[in-house]
Amino acid sequence: MNNATDKPIPLTPHEFAHLGDGALAYVKPINSEDVVRLFPQAPALKPGMRLFALLGADGSPIMLTDSRDAALANAWEHELQTVSLH
Image 1 (cartoon, rainbow, N blue to C red):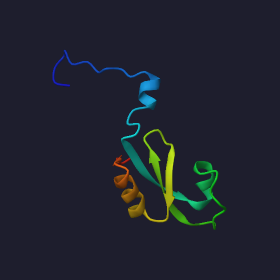
Image 2: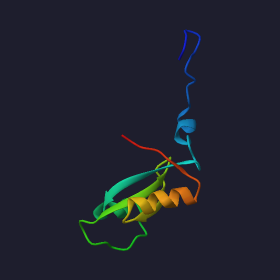
Image 3: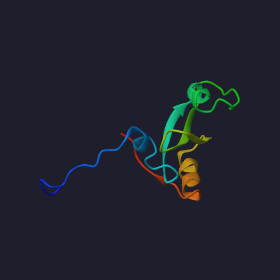
């Protein structure tokens, strides 16, 4: 904001929940034990594996892989801009 006349525009909970839909995604490292929560249809996996989930802006699962680079490539292929979460 540059001056006193600049006011933030509030978002409704619905607008906030759909911010970035179809345009933004993020890569989340997860353990194989946590896969079933995001991907209930996934087969049983060996415990202790480090995997990467590509998730939509709203947290919806897009893909699961064992490589961060593969998740980023999939986002690029589907014209999704990846963002960092801290």
